[in-house]
Image (cartoon, rainbow, N blue to C red; front, side, top):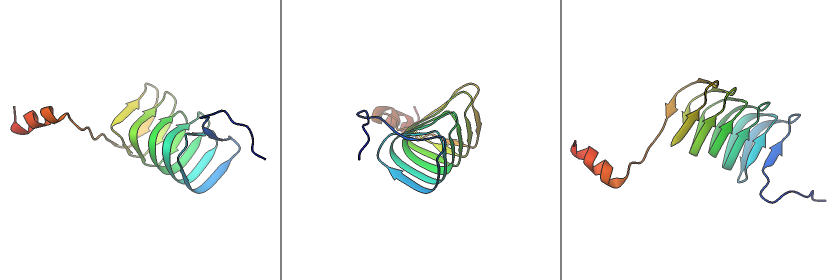
Amino acid sequence: MALPTAPDAPCVIGNQILIRGTLVGEEDLVVEGRIEGAITLAGHLIVAEAGVIEANLDVDSVEVRGEVIGDISAARSITIQQGARVQGNVRAPRVIINDGARFRGSIEMKVDLPEDLAKVLARGH
């Protein structure tokens, strides 16, 4: 029997759930529990205040409110909210670290410049 869900509602991993292994998906996901392993997600990931992830993340975008221990790679953006804790290297075109967040690692941001600006900079002007 399928449970009714709201259209476009994210999948939620509850605070009493522990997952060990590889998690792969194409939906938005909210983690209120704990995940240990690796996450590959073609959607938006939210690590809730009580959520703990010990895994390398390869996601479309992520918002960390809880704790992440591992490297994060995002196609669009990484946001680390006030009170969040991240330990690991992060890589995304857009990285936001809010006041009060704790972060230990390195940041890599690849920015594609508009073609005209790239040409000017290449000429040294």
